[in-house]
Amino acid sequence: MRGVTTRRVTALMAVVVIAAACRGGGAPAPPVTPPPTQALPTPPPTAASPVIQTPVALTPTPAALGGRPDCPADWAAYNDPDGRFSLCYPATLSAISERFSLRGTAVQIEPPDFATSRPDERVFLLASWRPWSWLQQPVPGSLCAAFAQTGEVSRQEGRMTVSAVEAPTCLTEVHQVEPGVGVTDHVDYYQLMVEIPRPSGGFVLIRGVYSGPDFDAARATLMRVLATLAVEE
Image (cartoon, rainbow, N blue to C red; front, side, top):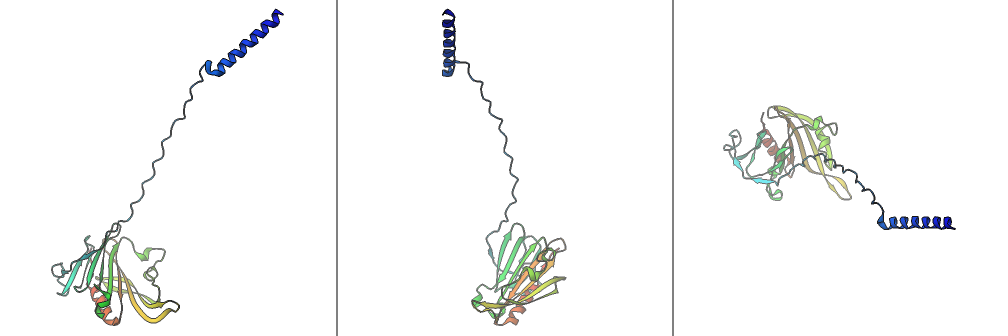
């Protein structure tokens, strides 16, 4: 009986020890070491978005004061702030300058009010510089394709001399488009695209538009302005 009692006491003591351990009375659990933190990769820098400033209306500068005494005395002169090109235009037209961070400065010549402008002043000319040529692009690869217009009925590629340089051109005839009718027989405007290479790099792109009712007079004004374009080296 004593042997049985001894075994019971030993078993009871073992239960008490296990219970005490379950209540936290046993040896503390080893500390858990957290895994080392890994530094997040630094994202690559993103390219800056092109900065386009608010267009600025320019005060006409007489041609002689603008360094262009070769232009008509009653015309104004525009000089690209980066020294890439200059041109003259009738002082009765307005000039608007627009700065692009990746493409320099563009100038837009147009009537102050198209609705009340004279027929010979119904012209629009946009001149800008860019480091690449439309003709060097795999798509579209031509001025006519790059500047296709809704309602165009014909396009003609050619070459003309501008600023003593032979440059590629595209002349497009655009007709009015009416809902439910489509392209009509009424001529809306003509668009002339010219791309002049600059000796020291880049290209000066000209977009000229002229419209009626006197298309011939408007075209003559546009061509007179284009004849004053001087692409600087």
